[in-house]
Image 1 (cartoon, rainbow, N blue to C red):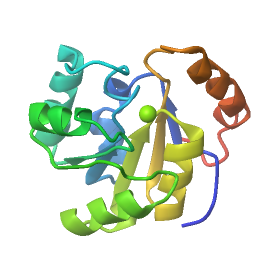
Image 2 (cartoon, rainbow, N blue to C red):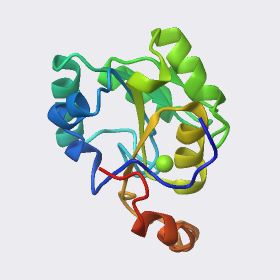
Image 3 (cartoon, rainbow, N blue to C red):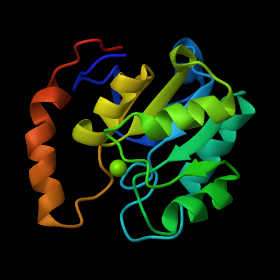
Length: 164
Ligand SMILES: [Mg+2]
């Protein structure tokens, strides 16, 4: 539960966070970022690969919970598609939304993880909340700002201080 910009685990896609990996990490609740983690910006559908992955994770006994900074309809739309609860306007890098999800799910932070694509929101929030941070690559840079921000994240993406 401290300020850190480094993730615990890095993978290319959220679908690479397999039930086996989650079991090895002792994760019982996987908190999901929305934008550029489970779907690119601007869409209201999920790839079949993502819905199949989510079903496999749930079948493995891991709970899913969407915690998104998004203020629009997407967190709710995707939560319904996946059949999971959600918190929107989560205010990451504040750990508030993550802590709320942990409390509502009744899971302590050491048995939870956040899957997200960003350093300066997701990773800081996960580390402050004391959950493991599973960093994925953003699905798509839909505008130049996202690519610039990604560039500013690279020092922390390259190094795996606590890495698996
Ligand atoms: Mg995101």
